[in-house]
Image 1 (cartoon, rainbow, N blue to C red):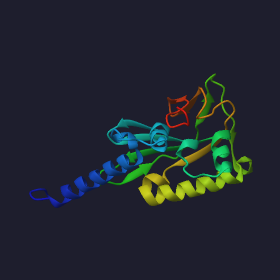
Image 2 (image 1 turned 120 degrees about the vertical axis):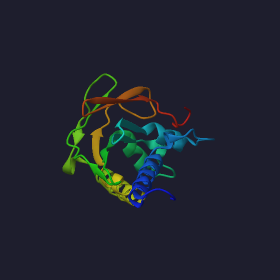
Image 3 (image 1 turned 30 degrees about the vertical axis):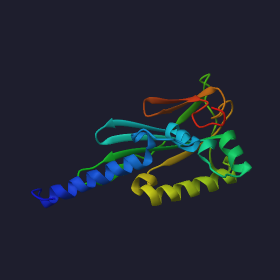
Image 4 (image 1 turned 135 degrees about the vertical axis):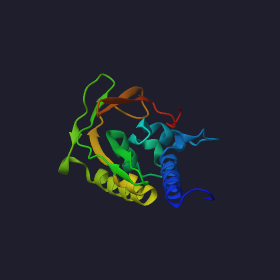
Length: 188
């Protein structure tokens, strides 16, 4: 970068990298052309709350329509359980990122009834394996941002991504909502 001091050039490069990571996790960054059902579902399932120029929260609901060529068991898993990923990222001067530990997330159905959070051995083995795989993919594809995600598994109860309803996710003073059926569901 001609005319830009070396330190500023590194900062600009780091900022460009952060922006590209943010765009990589969010298909909503641009209007999709001929979006597939999977792309529509993925776009809707990710909520990005840019709280300031250096502070962001990402909520990600893993929903059945994002699975291509999935087994019946995997589709049933994503329908029976509500699996939510949360990351709170802070951009630092110099281009590094830090992540808050995520202690509590509350998920509720359309009637406001909290969903039961599963922990430890109560999480089905297929869900545990899926989350290990998702976490590994995120770490490889988006680096530190992927490592910052914390995953929560809830009993789905009345919440189903492809049926009429609503999911609310409360985190750090904000309630993020999803109206269902989400875009990308069969017949929607």
